[in-house]
Image (cartoon, rainbow, N blue to C red):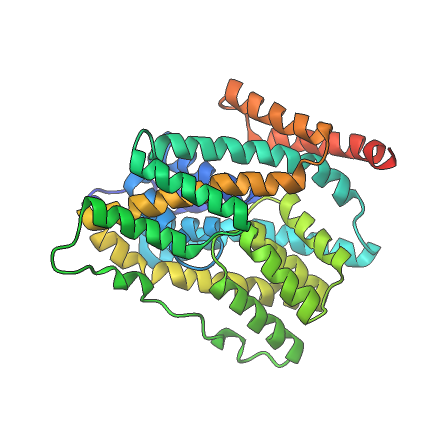
Length: 387
């Protein structure tokens, strides 16, 4: 229906927004999807709420990084494949360039000790940012709906207990709400959701260096079979990068995750940093392509189905169920990530202060909070470490 209505923005305005979000959007996937909702749905009204919810459902169902897939889908809404491609590239490119620069500094100077101090402060503030984003998504999309609240609570609990995002839970939630609210008469057509296949790896066929092929194959596999966000991909990467291939030490891997958390954009951009440490600039390029090209395919292939059938009652009910489960998983992720980032009374106070500031000053820029938290971390962490 909205295809007949001209969009209120140009493709280049959306690309500029995604470049900006990729440059200053801290907080990982939970915060980033919250920013997109706030900016594109509520404030600018470029994207309809129904399109946003469809994008969230698709991003949760398909493997790959959540925020990047949502950005790709939002680009597809009015500008199809070209919009999806440019929006996704604009969203990922700034953080990729940052991690490559940090990787070069890391290799040149034998490590980045200041990262731990910065992350000490930034990690705590990010928890507050994520918590506020999760609250806004919950209030807007679930409201007083008892069925969706039940799905939300179960999804949040499973995420906390398993410390991972379970795709079968998203599928089950969508099917449950669909069957209860809009049961099919002649059988469903949800098989279209699984109409895409993993990336074949043809992009790497022309690469002559065995190490780059190995890197590309591993990260393409990671991008094709890991669902949700950095919450899921970090242990997967650890098993492959440290334990199986022995490309990095434990300390190097921890530093790679810290780089992802202190830089804006998607958390899984840590794959670019890892690729740089293993094989230099081209290692970073191949690792990033291996991670993000599959999620691009997994978004644009089923996107026409969502656009064509997304407003049918059965599909709408399915999307509502998946969305409730996704928001529950996001809320559970706040607890899981908080266990890693809040380690003492200082970080707890920073997280609470962030929530209070965002609650009191609704237009307070998140980058300003992150900068203040980084400075506090640099000042306080040496004292807490010494103590």
